[in-house]
Amino acid sequence: MKKVDKKKFVVVRTYSAGAFAGYLEKRDGKEIQLSAARRLWYWSGAASLSQLAVDGVKNPTDCKFPAPVNITLTEAIEIIETTPAAQKSIEAVTIWQA
Image (cartoon, rainbow, N blue to C red; front, side, top):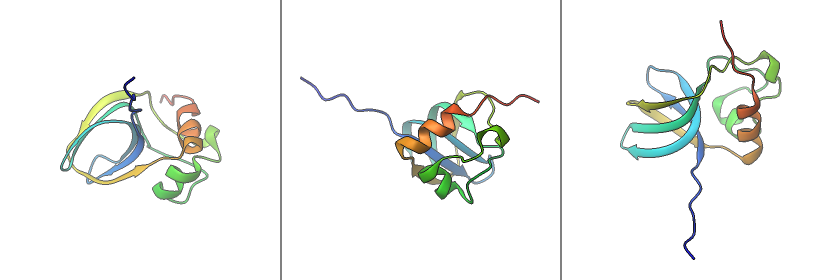
């Protein structure tokens, strides 16, 4: 039986497009493809992206994460694997709409 690789849920910081959390589909140098990616426009309850990737959000009702999209990011400068607890909290944030 083949082992099925589960896609990693990551937080990505880019040079100029901001930060995103999503499933890592592909990486080629600084180019990253994410699926079900949420732009981390505003978060509450984590001091940094590193803490967000480890602990998740502590105040989900105060976060502003728009709807998930599939996206290619061309200037990734930081890729952080999330913990299962952080992934769960990020994905649980209600979709923010202006």
